[in-house]
Image (cartoon, rainbow, N blue to C red; front, side, top):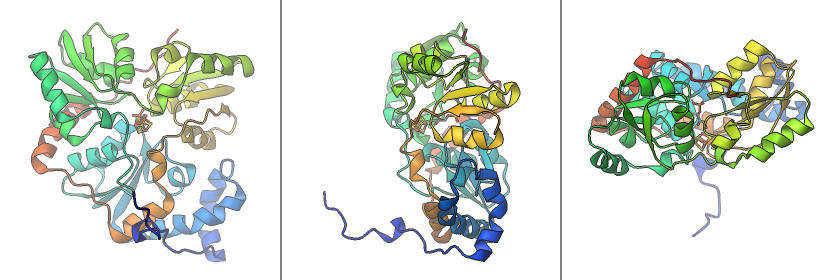
Length: 352
Ligand code: 13P
Ligand code: SF4
């Protein structure tokens, strides 16, 4: 492999400077995040926050940010934040001409599928997902041949090509409701095995599973959860359903990223540990200064490819545009729209 001698232009951070004027314009944002971003770091972020805000207006653009984005993105420049389902809904509803997706590629592709007429930008096209990489359209066709007549439910963490081969999509927020909406006795559920096993515990529908895993959530162990309980008195354990079943069995609450956030807001635990990507605790801590967050640090390397300099660069150059073959996009759109029609009947719950 040849390593380029200089960083390519698209990788270089645009030049910006921290001035008293920028400090004044971004003071209110910093006030919100001061608990999770040290004061010495703010001069690095603030010029990007100010420049992105200006360019967003010029381009008639909105920024959709997933709950796993870092606080300077999540609280600094995002117009809409949420889980995969929320971002898909917001992307479909916005009137803006340009959507910048601060999240991973399948999220940007889903936005493009729902709004083919809009320009959808991803600040780093290499922001992938181990679940999306685990399955292809050809795999789905093969499964259909093997199980004729059995409907296919596909997690949104997949490519447009895989969505196009599916009957309906789901997210972790509505997976049980989507599976049950089909009225079938058996369903092919792709590609997350652990989410599938979690759904299987909450429905009588028989599920045929695939062995895709999230590289972030599969690393959590039951022993780790027990160690948190021993070390931190009265800690409430919230876990994402992409975790292995033995981890979910140790949790007090299982839900999508937004389900966990809502749970903290509604129950205001004294101390909590979120068994998921670690930026989320920082984002939620901003809203709940009275809750103590124990922070396991499992980072999603794909989510972390998105940075403020790359968001600014995307708005300046209007790159990288996410494109989906119109014929594939049309079939994928049907699967996503069927999911949106089911809506959010969150299948979160206490496991004990
Ligand atoms: P949510 O839909 O719960 O936000 O999950 C998306 C994701 O990528 C989790 O790893
Ligand atoms: Fe994919 Fe896991 Fe990263 Fe979510 S956290 S984007 S499922 S690799």
